[in-house]
Length: 294
Image 1 (cartoon, rainbow, N blue to C red):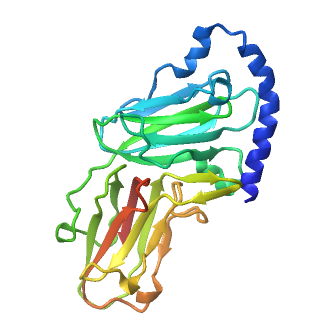
Image 2 (cartoon, rainbow, N blue to C red):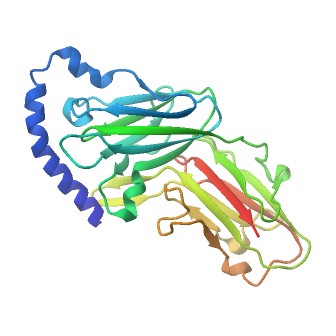
Image 3 (cartoon, helix red, strand yellow):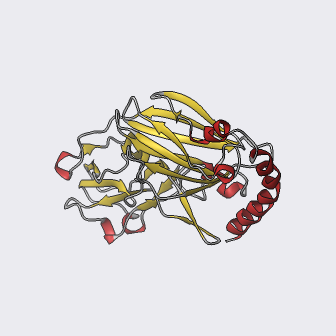
C-alpha cells in the first residue's frame, strides 16, 4: 500500500517538472514529436538496449512506444528497465506484452518502478517465455525517459507435456524448462524412489510481474509447481508452490534459491513414482524455471 502511494507522489512531482518540458515540445517540429512512434526493436538473440527519451515518453506525447521482437530461439527474454530521464531519478510506468497484432498476451499495464524500496525494486526486471520466429511487441507507457535492456536465452521446449511423457528428474541434477507465453501446455516430470525417504525439491523462477490497482500493488502472475502422487493428483490436495514474483530468485522474500519441504510429506515419501507438474499461474503468465530434488 505504501509503495503505491509513493508512486503517486512521484508522479505528482514529475508532472510539475514535465510542464516545463511540454512547453518546449509544444513548438517542436511535427517530425520530431513523431519520433515517439519510430520503429523500435530488440535483436533476435543476445542483448539489446532500446532507449526512449523524455521528449518521446508516453506522458509527453500521449503516444505509446512499441518495441518489436522476433526471437531467433525458443526460450525466454528478460527485460531490465532503467532510468534515462534528465528530469527524474527513476524509471516508472507500465508495460504490456503483446502478440503480432499488438493485442495483450500478458497482463495489461504491468507496473515497473526502479525507485521503489529495495524489496520491490526488481519490478523493473521481467521475463517472458517466447517461441522462435513469432512476432511480439512490448507496449511501453513511461513517465519519462527509460532504457530497456533485453537479454534472450535459449531453452529447449521438451515433449514432456503430458503425464505419460513425463521426463525423469535425476537426483541432484538441475533441469531447466520454459513456460511459453499464450501456451496452456503443462510440463511433467517424474521422480522414482526406490525406498521410503524424505526429499527436498528446490526451484527458482524468472517470470513476469505485478500490476497496479489504485494504491495497491498485486503480484498475480507466475509459475505453479505441484508435487503429485502416481495418479497425478496433488499430494495433500494443495499446490507445492505458486511462484508469482518476477525476480531472478524464487520469491518476494528470498535472495537465494529456496528449498521447500511440504508438510504433508515431511516425514518421507513411500517407495514409488511421483510427479512434478509445472504450469503457468494464469493466462498472462510465462517465463523460465529450474528445479532439482535431493
